[in-house]
Length: 147
View 1 (spheres, one colour):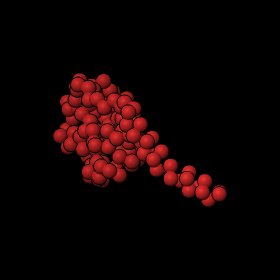
View 2 (cartoon, one colour):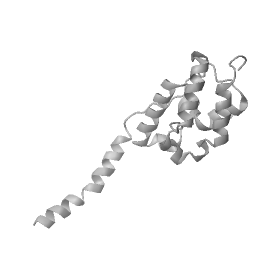
View 3 (tube, one colour):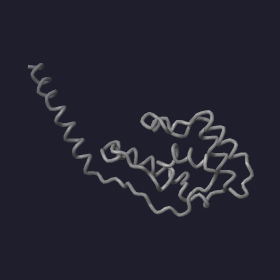
View 4 (cartoon, one colour):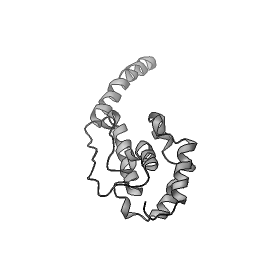
């Protein structure tokens, strides 16, 4: 009798999980790309690095991948983009203190905090090479006039 209860309980697990996942799709998620106020206008090599490795979470030019439309991944992606834009938004670059933001970017990238390791699992092109880090360091150390 105990075995029968276990078997009947197990046959409901998959349908219950599928139902929960189906209902999760009904939870709305905001995937917006507000207008760009003033984009980052630094050196082209630095811009290319930022566009490849940072813009999906740190700009108003996010490329929303297919999995950003499927819960629960959609919740995580939208949350990461929202937090990323709050911390740094390249679509509003003039709002930041240029020199301190440069140092912060170099620190986060050099320490491997950014791009986020979880982002790099799927977006391998976003990985920063030692050459990329050297370009960012050179940019951060350069005078800010005219950039």
